[in-house]
Image (tube, rainbow, N blue to C red; front, top):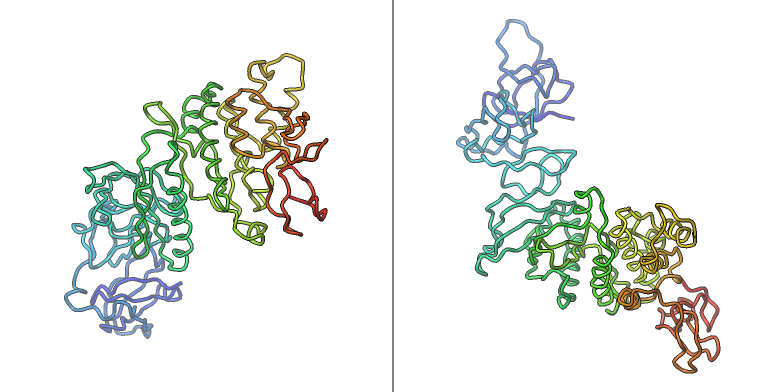
Length: 477
């Protein structure tokens, strides 16, 4: 790979092949002869003293991107001290060997005194404060505090950083210095940006549709400009529940408090699942639940992974992008076919984690709970009588088969409110008592559950809980 540096005579950029190490070369612009050190990245290129007998210099190609520099522009000197880490720079350096900061001949330490460090843990290079993507690895760079976005939002500090961009605390200077959270999405690749923008815009639309829920952050603005987009939301002053538990040595929360939080989350899920087509969150976990600093309520965050199930039979059955967190995702979501009951599985895993301090292990946790609930032997793992209903509810909704879970968030919330597990229901037609979640009354065949999605073979509606289509016999998922 050629090494890019500057001629110490004319300051034009030249490319040095690796094979030129330790040899004489000639600058293609000023024709002066130079000597290349054995280590291209560590030794400077210095003028060659004239001798009576010397080998024929190698002709190098100048970098065409900067060969048209004006004399005044090329005369600017490279700073002798790195603006980022203050390390001494070798003559002709194009990057700091200590921190990776890319040296620009047109920039001085005075004009570039606040470099931005790449947040990619595998990189960590320092970049100019004006850069939006890392010049070394291409990762998005955090905005500098004090930056004014779109003439309205002043960046205060960075709150979080991820693969798509960052989340900042900012001030809306046009709304009386209202504090807001700005979710930043930047991407250097135009094609990749278009793909990411669709996810970003969908998150904004989902937040707008859930504004009536008190535990969903308010959505104020969505702005897309060039290769950047910003989602402006309510600033949540608090900490996520996972960090709170970890800071307290994984001590669980009281079950009564967990039950109350579960009811609030059920309201949001019910609202999402009622939409046409239904919306599935796909990443419900303690990390995405914020507990407010005033201890008054929780806020459900990060709807970036939520998506609809599709309007046509083909899109509903097609495999979706595999987005999940291990331990909280059911088997159907892991293979790319989530549905509303997948969120109930994640909710059960989340409530289990909050009430026990233990990370769930998917449906294996349900099997462990089943053993504990069936055991009559007392011990440290014995579930107290007052909490048996809660862990039985968790066990049901962590079932491997979606048909064995609750069918709706509304049903989930109802049992949380009653603090019991409903096991029987009466048929509305003949009043016969049936086992809960049976699709049809065993006596009069009246439907007992909500309609399920159309059969993929005949297109006719069945009832939730049906294993096979009652019209064509096709196996239902």
